[in-house]
Length: 549
Image (cartoon, rainbow, N blue to C red):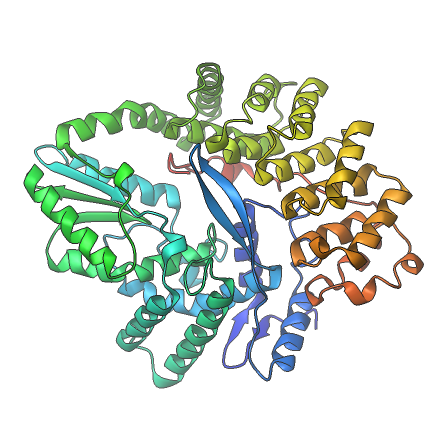
């Protein structure tokens, strides 16, 4: 079974090696990254057995699990949801959507630049990257609108709460419209129809609210979002408007301010038929010259850095990263945390920290890490700050700052941050009696949120004693908070060092999703509870990074 190359899903079968490669890329972008990056699950035999049993037990059809909803800070006034599905449901999402992506991408408007199918993926030259490089596509989006802006008026808008308002039934209808225009033969169309039907059933189970909402921060959702907006794209093309779209960002070059207002009205009316609306706070009409100048203010300096990196010559790369480091220090000092430049700079530094092939000077990023740790209270940027902090090595002072923040219940209100911080403390081998006590109180509380519990479980697994781990066993058997796939996986990882004979009563409480997790980690030579993000090779380090990250 371990040599199986294809996953049999009834009417269709998918290349397992391809699915695993795509999953590894998708998982790397997660907000709530698995502490061990699903090492134990990314196995062809494990995946094949789960799907065989699932389809067998459900009379020939895959049955998805219910989802979990967590929160991620988006701005001081708003949060986005993180719709978490089980690992195997993620496999299913890719498996049933991949044939649709390959069949329907060519029907999308050429003026849609986001998440377009990579021809090298289709040809087999590069099975790692499903879509064209996001940085290059974003550069085209910026370039097309900026270069032609002079003498025009530029309408910029984006869609409010885009993913959470996508109507599953409307999406189904649009997918079937694409199927009608597909040029495949009858046999292939039957397979595509099967994929659509199963996918829609799954999406309704995962929906943010009844019949609406896609899982965010997922490659498949990005494609389905493109399909969902295709009626708007076709309409704007029919009207011969000079527009470009990147995901939910829309820009239109217009002849006059009144013309721009008219186009905006038409967009709003068309979006209404899709149960969507424009975001008024991000909608504006500006003269082309003003628009060009605004873009040039930050894009020109960053473009210079990207140009230096693309040369791949050591002196130029060193110069580029020296400038990036200086920018990061100044941005933190001035607390300019909301600009695209901030996200670009820290995304770049995170990738540098993850490139172990490059030996950095001692404490090269330590001061930046310490300064970043003091700004964890800044909700809008917490995602990029946490990912940076998770990638670097810290001194004791920084770890004390982070741990004090974590134990301050009035400050540590964002479960996304808390989860990342617990994992960071585990990876940094940082233990205090106060943190152990705090972790224990979290897993025993009936009001703790799943990400908080999950992070605390990893900490107790790594630093707690036998009594702490036996308490976790009792919680698995008795606490409702431990019944979901996410918390339960972390609990099993936390008790991996306990002997089999202590877990006899636990077995019947383990969900099918988590079968085999204990055995895999218990049989390793060295216990592991959380790992730093996977290394990035130099070749990927020097790839472009969009200011849209």
